[in-house]
Length: 329
Image 1 (tube, helix red, strand yellow):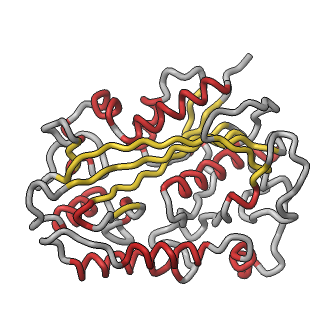
Image 2: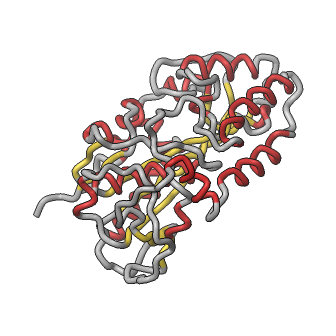
């Protein structure tokens, strides 16, 4: 009997390499989004890390017809009122890179004294299985979803599709609440509060107006709030809606094999630390050169991959997810 496949929902080579290390001991064949050239990107317009991870896992599972695992990470810096939060990957703008994001964070924290540089990473990891069978007992932090792509539909007026989904769960209202709550944040002395507020407003602007986040692929899919398709179990015959999101290619391999009900599992991991005064180390990626975990005198970029995976937010999230995965399968 052939092994089941897990598709890592990312084309980021650094992240895929790290995820492959974390799931290396599982009895599954591991692939990534790069193995599926036709797999569409998804617009990451959730207000939480788990919301964005869920969107990526659903689209990957729907297209591939295989188990999909996605993750999303937020970096919350206490001195910046919790920023960059879910904007970590695009903190420095439309053309953000690892270097530009680190440079901006270091610049914003330049005058913040030692002892006031606390921060934490949090990763949400989500698994979606579009062919889970009918096993009833599911692990903690799991739920059933209706197959939202069971039909192929076409909106008569495609430009109005987003307005239609807003009628079920208003993404715009969620972003208005997120913006209002986080805009008047308290920052540490030494931080340019006006500049930080301007950066935050610019990052939120397209989302508040219902547009795509800056830097998103124009061809990326917009997935409505997945809660619309929640199911009571593997035999739930009710239908949450008679329409499906458009955008999933008609020739997607998953269309021929996906079952009517899907299983979703989630887990999270967090690591506490502080922001170093300047980048150190050449390993890792993202903000690793600036993040020093508590209990260590090295940044994550100065650690081996094994050391980092042992304590990191992504490592903790994936280990928790893998426990549930092994229990179910």
